[in-house]
Image (tube, rainbow, N blue to C red; front, side, top):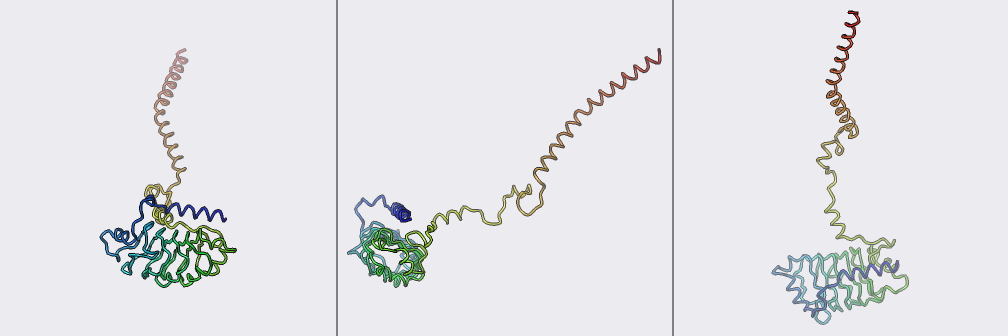
Length: 261
């Protein structure tokens, strides 16, 4: 199972890779300005500034004006502190992987009290005491610490689940080793599924679906066969009758010949 967790983490890290990462990193503040695209901060629900460069290891350019922000991704931006993270009361998902964080996580419960998903993989978190501050994130359901030194501790998973009882998924798996569902895939599946109670009109017409008591298809086939057979008999009947009349005439001729004799 350890290999499964590791492979899962590597896949997630690969999915987050940015093809433009080799290009000189943009200043985080400038990147945020570009991401606004002539919108006000209050209109932004999702913000991704991955692979940009923060100033002195601190959040830079993000303010409390982002009142509607629900998803924030700051992957590989050089963060070593969250002290300047603004208050984001509507934030539910926070991506902070591949940074230099080792402490100051208590800021999250103060500034982002409604977090349900937190990714801290690839940071410098070594001890259980580093994540103890997350106890105040009462809505936290999923926590990712993959590729942090803390994962090498004995009974790491059991210890974290005990320390943070509100967490359901740690590094992508629950306590029974069931993998966390892919929310995006679930949404696509729900969008593609037909609403309950909908029926195909063609199926309704032949009675095979819906509440109507339509005729059985096998019975219909039998009825069709009988009708075709009856039609064939009707087509053949005139010829049969002509043959019968011919035989009757011949018989009458023979009878007349006998009487003459």
